[in-house]
Image 1 (tube, rainbow, N blue to C red):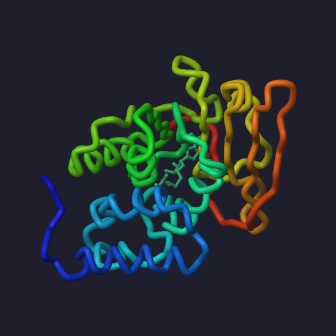
Image 2: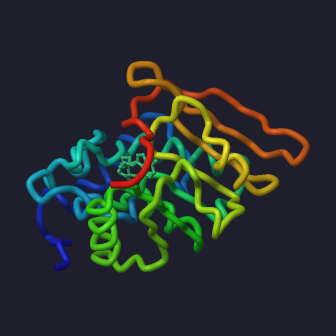
Amino acid sequence: MNRVVSGFGMTSQRTRARMIERLREQGIDDEEVLAAIAAVPRHVFVEEALASRAYEDTALPLGFSQTISQPYVVARMIEVLCAGGRRLGKTLEIGAGCGYQAAVLAQLTDEVYAVERIAPLLAKAKLNLRAINQMKVRLKHADGRLGLPEAAPFDTIIVAAAAIRVPPALVQQLAPGGRMILPLGVATQQHLALIENQGEAYVETSLDTVRFVPLLTGVE
Ligand code: SAH
């Protein structure tokens, strides 16, 4: 069932516009990224009981001990990937969760693959993306630490769960000129890392301190 309820105060255009203003105040200034976030109705992706909080800039529970990413962090990661006027191109997301970030990515590029290890969450992502009529995202139930070899290489890889070290398969699946962003570290000490495949070399840059759920092994 389509849960987009127009005219519902808390999920109104005005509430969404306020979220975008807050992202600007926090330093997000890529207009394309802001437009992509503005275009995705986040309330569709959260539990109905939490819909009124969907446009707060906060992570919210998804069930299965997972959370929907905070809008600021989604915006920040995508802004870094797009810096210098770069296009996202063929994009792989690891940790699709409820599909929110995949929907934002699909506003910015035509080729989005998203992998999730928890089957019921993947099913939710499918329903949510269908509810907003977003049919572009190709979802797969798999352990994302192994990437998605059948669709590699990727121009962009974005990881939504924290790894202790960079998964080698993901580096191998990054196209020349490609960029990957991922949270690295353990629960209390994580930072975003940007990895660029410059052909001859991989260049890693450490960015903001963050807090993500861990990147786990295997599927369930
Ligand atoms: N992108 C989501 C964030 C979900 S939280 C959003 O837009 O809100 C991170 C997700 O990563 C969880 O759903 C978790 O199950 C998933 N995850 C953790 N380890 C994984 C792995 N090895 N492969 C695929 N998904 C993984």
